[in-house]
Length: 324
Ligand code: GDP
Image (cartoon, rainbow, N blue to C red; front, side):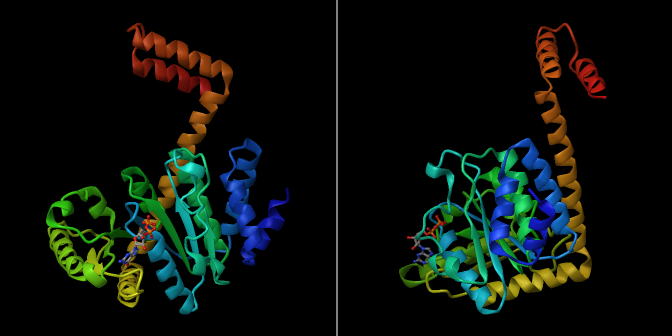
């Protein structure tokens, strides 16, 4: 496969090339891995930057409805929008949370949008890398906004937060008791909480919920990457398409502040460094498991450590010295 040619076509914004490139980064084959790494590096050379937005929320909160409404709002502004899904649960039937054709029907047909379903049968570690590389490919293909959707399971949210510039948490209108159910950790990684379904009979509950969240956010310690007033809680209705303008204005205000303050560059630099270290860790683990002699020695030493004949640190030193 000629990765150079594919890279050129991705950079030119050809969606079929982009789809193929993402398939390549999703592949677990060793030769594909190498080609994928080369491709991502090549595409990244152009230095294109998109606004990467993470979006999370429990099933049923309205993520796909919101992405459809918000995505259409963005394309109408003349922005190119890519949507990727990160789905850590391989248990899902078909493995794809975007597999359902009825999801984001209008957006998926829009010439300015690109929607990529999540790959099936994935493990979280692999998902992280594939998603990050897919984001980089969309960025290199000239998309202005890359939306990364994930279901609300703690680990995947942290992972997605590590690859985006902005993190949105979609919430449902709820009583005070349910408010407590939102984990502090997720509140801390979110930049904007969006209370969805602020329409019809739910409007008043949504308003109260939003005020409650705003109150809870004020109790959090101010983060260095935030201006005054963030994180923020806002109301939206994905079904009616209301609140999009306000939500986008807040996102832009936050992003502009972060760009001016240097927080944007700092976060991206830290993320890149983190992913580099993850790649090294991953590569080392792969060598340990792929080299049969090493893997056998790992098992022997593991048993020896369990039996108390060797100390963990000393046994690890032996393995590491064999890596050369
Ligand atoms: P997801 O599982 O988070 O992707 O949620 P969906 O987008 O599939 O929405 C789940 C249900 O909530 C569907 O029945 C939607 O019609 C409904 N829903 C989504 N957004 C809104 C909204 O803004 N208002 C109301 N009333 N219902 C909504």
